[in-house]
Length: 273
Ligand SMILES: C[S@@+](CC[C@H](N)C(=O)[O-])C[C@H]1O[C@@H](n2cnc3c(N)ncnc32)[C@H](O)[C@@H]1O
Image (cartoon, rainbow, N blue to C red):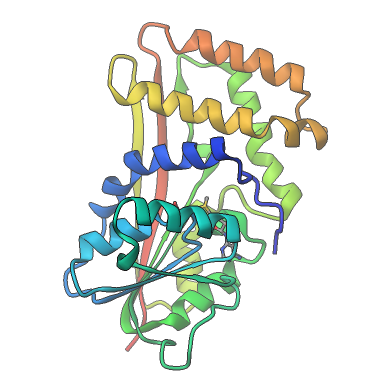
């Protein structure tokens, strides 16, 4: 298990993740059929925005439990939930995804077990997925949504930024984590015993002039800038190089036709009856 959560817990990082929720939540919800779902477990709930979005989408009366191991994330998640008047929508529980804090009655009981952007941060995704499968009821569903960092494309090409991005995601290996885990989500579900598995991807990206464009470019910039100290300390990318690559990104974003493409793999498995 990695104790070094690569994104850190700074207010800037929490604000970046919060902005990304606006982009991603409804795109992901479009992929999920929540009809008839009356209990949801969200593993690695982070700031809880998607946990609450799942609760809202599933409707009143749905029991929603989030599991989050980090106290700072839980505190901010509950602050945001209270601010939105939605703290009753979910129960946020401390605990680790490799050994879910569930009662015997809760095991094999959830209609939907979900994890987003979790598996890329753990050293044993197989174990996490097995735990998730053991939390779902027979016939219930397990949904995994995670990064394959190699799916980023920029047009026109921007070699310095592409190099910095690669240095960033290759650094996941320093923590024993897999930055390309998204491509094996379906395989993980099958290996954990799910019967039927489907896979798709959620696209987000934009071209210059679209309202989303500044947000997605700022997000890329924020991810790279946020990793500057760690990349420098690990000897993967000197800070001065990263700064010139960020300047390259700043120039790139006003080029005619500038376009950022990114896709996020999603897989859904059904637990055998
Ligand atoms: C990138 S955030 C994603 C949060 C949320 N799922 C979302 O999509 O907005 C990953 C979260 O997983 C938590 N996490 C990492 N490893 C964990 C583990 N083994 N057990 C429980 N939570 C974990 C981190 O503390 C962090 O809050």
